[in-house]
Image (cartoon, rainbow over all chains, first blue to last red; front, side, top):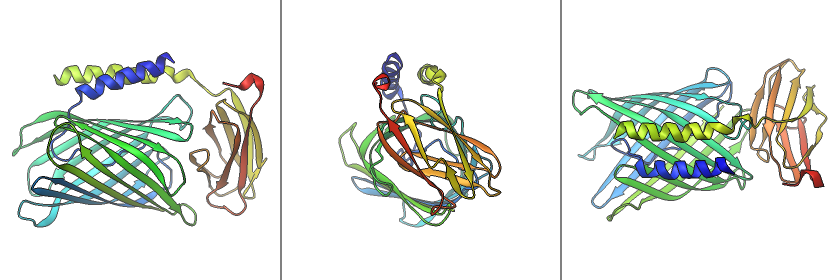
Length: 233
Length: 118
């Protein structure tokens, strides 16, 4: 019981001090698991609507598990710019580690490192952090805490942080509703989400997830809709 | 400011690591042979963490899969894998082998006794 109290107090404290990287705070909440032999194609979309502007990001990626605890994934990221032109915005390489056996300890842990380079602009971003998941009967609490360092000739170098959380009810394989939370320096967003999967032969399966996040820390319209599809094989 | 935040995070996440000594005490051994689980029906105590030790005696890998147990784990050919499950509420939890879903099927039955109530 003391551990649960400590955890609750700790994360409450953390939520009041967390700050975020520039740009879009809402994104995928990572889970700390890696399956050997797994390959995947992934597509993500993020649409953020503020008063007079809509930011639209899409990314496609290919990932592969290189061992039973380590996986890498590469992404091409597209963005609609200020002229409403849609084009390549950045490239990214991501590495994930599963640090402990699922279910062996009180909670499951993973780690993530990403490096992103913007297309035709000297802006880099290095993200690293911890992934946490705790199973509570038929629900799962997943939390991501990332430290982000940005540098380049056209931006100020800075160190920032991001916090993401998802509390999910594993109702059916195809429908697992959740509440998602994203916190940043000028952004606290919360909203409903869901995820699910459909299995095919062998390791083939299609996973989907979506969330509708509303900014709640200040006035003004700021809604984000995210959707992701992953085909694993 | 950043330094203070990092210290805060370190304290919080160190705290989350503290209960790592909660190892499973109950172990159950399962054989995977000819794409079948032996035994296919596994009775375990409710409210306890269980370590399933699965010996894959086939020459092909298998993936232990269970939505009920919230587990996916690849068991390499002719190797042994450990899968930690629970603590489970009393009831039945189905699992199957993803590469041989028609044959490799089983169920974990969590049984409650007076001593094992939470």
